Each structure stands twice: as structure tokens, then as C-alpha cells.
Length: 321
Image 1 (cartoon, rainbow, N blue to C red):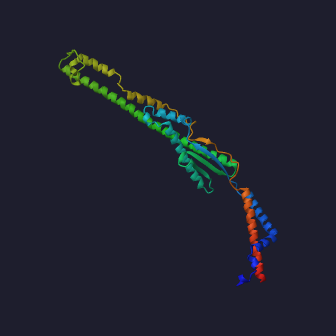
Image 2: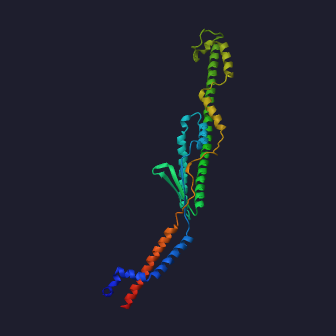
């Protein structure tokens, strides 16, 4: 076999090392060539910088206008009004859902944009780490800030639209309550007049013109005619001009209706999130890493040069046999 006829030194590590040492100039040349190729890659490779921000739910002051509006809308029914803590989390959940949706949309573009939204602590969605990779430090910072601001503005606009809708619904609801109470009062007044008029007819029919009783507190509608026709005619005139008797529910609904119809929706100071740390200006790029690329280029150059030298020497040895 050919293998048995080859010199034993060909399989000796020392002999291989001697071969490589003799061809060190060639290996150095290949190494320099690879380093040049690596440097060329660094010149033309697209830089990647990452800007990060940490956000959480808004403070009570950042949603103060929103809270005030809801206090007006539900002024007559505190049970329907959410607490400040509930509002903070509702607003932030809306914001974070929109931010995650944007991240998915950007990732599916023809040229994907890497926007990442992750919980700062696993299982806790109240604190989020948001990062974006850009072509420069400034680009990454500005884009991250721009996307966060855009989502905040959209979330606040959605809240404003919800309030506008709720104001319309609440106005209609309160108007119905006021109208219902007024109608009930009118019906009660008309019923009272009907009862007195009926009693007057009976009094006239029985020729009962004067009061026949000393005490009238215990009179029912059926015995009201005992007051006499003169007293009953006076009661009819009095009831006709008497204002409607309205209960506290009417006035409570009326006050709430006036407040809602005169409400001014101002969301200029409302925020759907709060920065723990603003988008930073990255100091170091994440890729390409110069030192790593140059070191790998040099290592690959040495390996490639050594493989060429060993392969060439083996080929020469075989041909000489």
C-alpha cells in the first residue's frame, strides 16, 4: 500500500512543525491577506448600535386629567368609577399591547427593524425593557424615543376617543333618568288632580259644600269628597299651579347631566407610561466588533496557510515517490 511506503516523518508532529516553520513567510502572507479581508469587511459592514429604555405604568399625576374627567362622568355613581391604581394599569396595559404590536409589525417588514419589548423581571409586566437596534448610536436613540412617543400619543388619543364616547353614552343615560323622573312627577300630579276632581264630582252630587269633618289627615282618596266641594275646588286650583314634586334622584341626575354636558376634554398632559430610564445613547456598538473580527481573521489566515503548506508538501512527496 502507498501509505506504508511514505516516510514516517510525514506523520511526525515535529516534522509537520518544521514544514510550517520553513513556510512561515507564506503563512504570514496568507494571514496578512485574511486580516486585510477582515479589515475590508469592517469598512463596509453595516454597524449595529442598541439603545435601551426602561418604562413602567404612569404616575397618578400623569393621568390626573383622565381621573378628573372620569370623576365628572361618574359623579353620581362612584361604584362605576375605577380607582386610580386600576386606571394606571389599564392605561399602561393598553400602551404595552400597542408597543408589542408595533414590534411585531416592524419585524415583518422587508427590511426588519429590531424593536424588542421584554419584562424587566420575568413574570412582571409592570416594568418593561424596550430596546432598538439602529445603524448609529444617535439613530438608535432617536428611533426608540420616536416609536415610544408615537405609541404614547396613539394610546392617549384612543383614551380620548373612549372618553368622548362615554360622555355621549352618559349624557343620553342621564337625560333618560331626568326625563323619567319628570314624567313620574307629572303622572303623580295628574293622578292627584284626577283624584281631587273625582272627589269634587261626588261632593257636588251629594250637595256637600262644606267641610263635615274636624280631622282630615285620615281621609283616603275614596273619602276625600267629605272635605266638601268648596275645599276641593281650592285644592284643584292649588294642585294645577303647584310645582312638580321631584326626589333626590332627579336632582342628583340633573347635576351630573349638567356637569357632563359642560365637560371639557383635555388630554394634553396625560401619559400612558413613565420612564424609569430614558432611551440611552449607546457608547459601544454591538457589531461588527473590530478586535474580534481581526483576531478571527488572523487565526483563519494561519489555519488556511498551514493547510495549504501541509497539503502542498504531501502532494509533492507523493509525486516524488
